[in-house]
Amino acid sequence: MVTTDDGVALAVDIDDPPGPASGPRPSGLTVVLAHGYTLDSRSWTLQRSVLQEAGHRVVRWDQRGHGRSDIGEPATHTIRRLGQDLREVLDAVVPQGPVLLGGHSMGAMALMSYAGRRREHLGERLRGMALVSTSVGGLDAVRWGLGERVGAVVTRTGPDVAAELARHPGWVDRLRRHPTPLSDVAVATSSFGSRVPRSVRRLTRDMILGTDPAVVASFVPTLQQHDVADLLDTLADLPALVIVGDRDVLTPPEHSARIAARLPLAEHVMVQRAGHILMLEHPEVVSEHLARLAQRCLDPAPAPPPRQARPRHTVVDLRPGRGRRAPTPGGGG
Image (cartoon, rainbow, N blue to C red; front, side, top):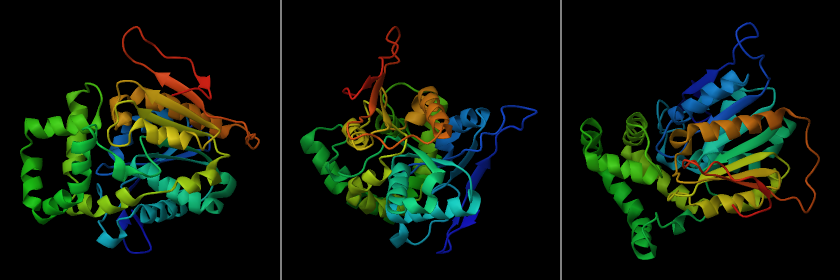
């Protein structure tokens, strides 16, 4: 447990790589992975094992209000505070050595907020960033794949619905104990763009329904007000992975394209027939690209990108017989 400066205990998992006698020699790189809204550190469990086997140390933690961590005061449920929590986790368990920061959705928003504002805290130790299914702002205009009119209503009424659920936690508790087919469909529709194993659907449902309804409600304003686009320029010299599913209705692909356009050393990956929680829907794709980025982080520091440098775009299509399209420098994603 790491206790923050405002007294919130955060549950942190630290996984060291195998020793030289039993596996790859430790690389010295620590990969720090932040989960998304209403999820917890289990959402990264499949990538953890791959990174460990590659010789990297892996740190995951449950954000305040999520998983096994304390809830804290509602006023602290902001992306900026999550960025401060990240700093305190790093100070406590990664005090030295090279670091790769990775985040999904709200977790990636928090690390962009932290790294963009406090880049000097890590300095040359920060070797790269992995940004999965996320956004630098404009979430108040997301239409959830429901069309302009219906989507606008859902966005406008969402905070009120979340607040009402927070006033009646028994509803969510009953749904948690006795899930219905409708709840499973709702989770699958918002989370995935293709069929996933039942175990993955259940894990996702358990994480979402396991989040206190009051926490769900209190984080809505910070998500709708989130805007860190101007901070990306401070991260432009870092190798990066920006990856998203083409069927992501929560942080649509154009949000990732906007991020990649500001990061010249990024690999911008679009996964076909994929939704929001890419790490669980297509774990092998995320693991492969994350491991590749980790290796880039261990290479000698790249020279500052030239003015004309542009991100590399890749499309991953997992349908039978489709394979992958070759990466294209500066091409459309």
